[in-house]
Image (tube, rainbow, N blue to C red; front, side):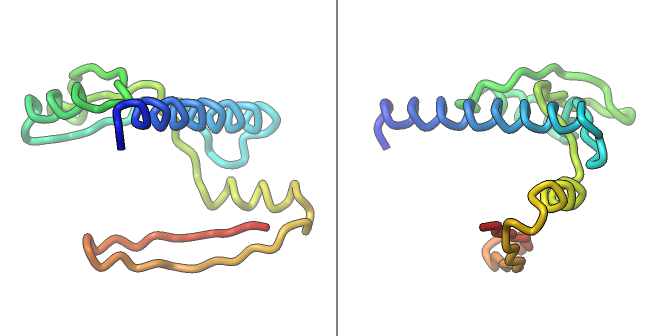
Length: 122
């Protein structure tokens, strides 16, 4: 991917992120039944200098500070939010009132041992 393509991709990711967060905020204002809260994301690490270098290299240029969290140095990333995905999906399903079919599945990624939940609505 060329530099131009990377820039276009990063701009698209930023736009998707900001739009998603604005939708979450609006839905929470109407009724916060999915535990939405705007709060920093804390990254605890045994190598704070390495974490700082990594964050500074991130092409999305996240805003962060070095803070103390639970008695340890950590990075606090701002512009993040927390919500319950399951509760949000339940809310969205109630709002669309049976106008979508939901297919649930699990995908096992053997490479890193993670389990990802996949939900498709159409």
